[in-house]
Length: 399
Image (cartoon, rainbow, N blue to C red; front, side, top):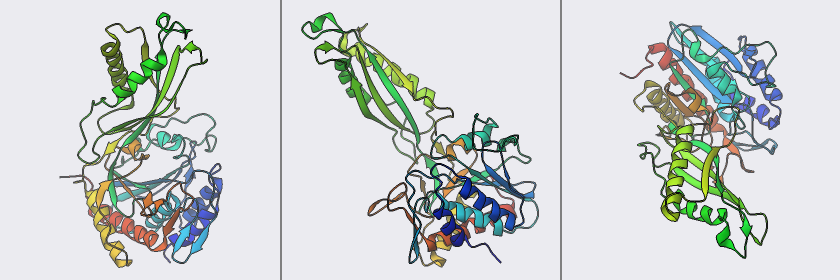
């Protein structure tokens, strides 16, 4: 009997995994054991299971944590509502179904690696790729993390479960957070010339943010964006402020890295101050990235000619029609930062049922989060078909 992803999803959505993922993790472990597999939980809290042996090696990844607040399960006809229904327990159900039911002849390895905290710090994904485990994580004591790149054989491609509307997403912008610190000299507001006004300098720098342009538009992702999201400065209404801080949000495109962005922006802003105030401006500026225990989710892009891309896209197009849906399977970028960036530059496709947003507004992370049952079944069928093609043919790299 084949695995029923919809029944699994309905149970998973009922579990509140906003702060504690153990309930959903146990459900996943039970499903894998019932399917005859021997999953393990590593020291970072990742659930891992593998089938087959030898090359090629395909990895399924998604996450079991959800954002707060928990929204209870509700079945509305052919639609499942509730927190995690599309982000990302719907994609998890589809990947799990394909992992359990796919069949192929000959060699080939299929690995399921499900992470516990994608919505926060991605410690699980970081450990999967590096073997580094942060103290106090959600895993099992003494359970080592074997990095996926060191597997025998190493992975050839990844499918990452997220709500893509059954499209094959091959790229995503990265997301960096940071703070611009502007330093001046405090003085009495009655004698402003005796100080250096950090708030005034920050105002000049806001305009300079609009001229920051160090990376070319990406063919799949377009332009990077840089948005000031907050500003704070001054301590007294009658004092020239000595400090001001501007928080920023950067959505990056390849090949920009977090540190490359930070250093380039700092140099750009210093040049802007010198141009506005004269060389050797009395105000000073520095840029820092928000402290994280794991790397930021950086931009990634997979060559659309990779076989894993066409396999997922073609299978999704066929499965969506078979399910009575409008034809899906478009190859396009994903609309949010994702743990897929940890697995690149290996060929990586983001795929799953559900939507980040629809014509009525936000879906993922929103009060109205939902996924359509037909889309879950179509996603499961598509991933199974693509897996059997990739492993059965042994074709996993572009010509």
